[in-house]
Image 1 (cartoon, rainbow, N blue to C red):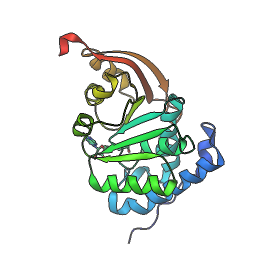
Image 2: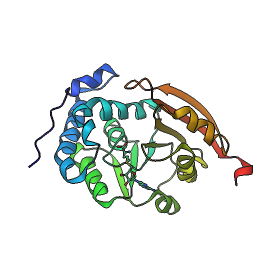
Image 3: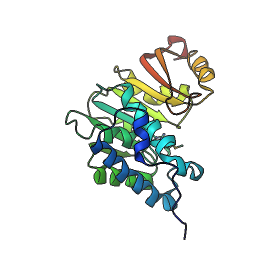
Length: 220
Ligand SMILES: C[S@@+](CC[C@H](N)C(=O)[O-])C[C@H]1O[C@@H](n2cnc3c(N)ncnc32)[C@H](O)[C@@H]1O
């Protein structure tokens, strides 16, 4: 029997990073409790990061929706345990114009994501499958923003999100301290406008906000 991890902070810590309403905090608490409950069976986050779930995962993911506060339709690729997709959906729970599509290839994680949406009363749709297949059969209209965290290299993220970015979607990708090398490598094959935001949680990491993304003709 695994004992529950000792958390190093409570939900209030996220208010250090930005404006979070009481209702949102309550939904985030429901979500954190679910992650802790499902973690032993599903390994939703790296076990060593669990005690710092409020900063390492929740606050880190809040920044995604804060990057594009006006966006309505989101696609989160490789949502895993719901970072940042479920946190984005929780922030948008009171916005009837907003919807988050969570794309996750692992069926058990997809089942967890469905539970998390339902229990937190958030708007979203879980697509259990690989982005390569889900994007081919997309029938859910225009996408405003594509997000991904800890999924793939920047070059591959551009390729996976191309069905949406070719239609004008912007992107927000979380990247660690090696972000500059990835940006340089990706710029051989892709054109884009980039705004770099230093992560509020980890100053060595970046939220990379991309717009006007297209493949360079020579790379086709
Ligand atoms: C390392 S985890 C990151 C999960 C989450 N974004 C986070 O930051 O905690 C990557 C997730 O992407 C999923 N995944 C990998 N390749 C995928 C693909 N081609 N399409 C959809 N999901 C994928 C995996 O099943 C896994 O849950």
